[in-house]
Image 1: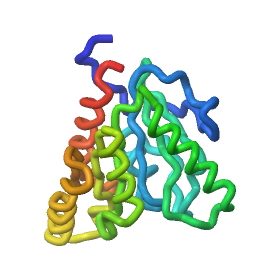
Image 2: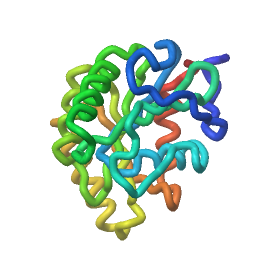
Image 3: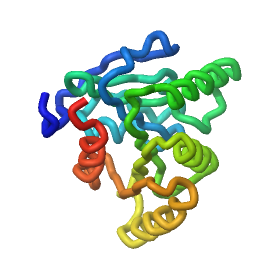
Image 4: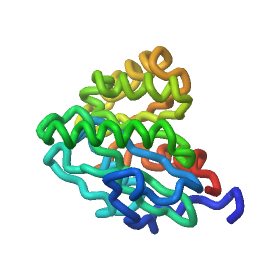
Length: 202
């Protein structure tokens, strides 16, 4: 595959739901992970960027309870991480998620970057800030999607974008940010361009 080949977003398919490191696919190629608070719109964003119905979106927070991986082509993948900030899961399960995610984010060699999903109406909450700081320290690139932008008028949405853009350098100097709406497809091509740059040719 040449270096100019574009990932086949529309042909993305479910690969595996991993509940432990041993269940992850071989650590080679290129991978981009989607992270964010529960119910921020991770699954909806993945569906908008790939194809409808690929990721299971739910109005019930905390439904994603594994690292769910989707194959694009060759050895290029997207990963849907469990949402954080939702406490109804048993303590032991939440502790397991924390250990698994920490190991994944620290050691996964094929991980090229994180897409951090935030509800545009409630950005930069404690968990978001903590993840940004961790990624900055680890040298992991981050691109922020301010989702559900269709819920705000244009002026307030742009103001939210401005505030997050101003706050990011202190949290992660190289993080990007954009407005995004899965419903109206605002920002889909912009976000795909970031993914393409990260994924390269695998």
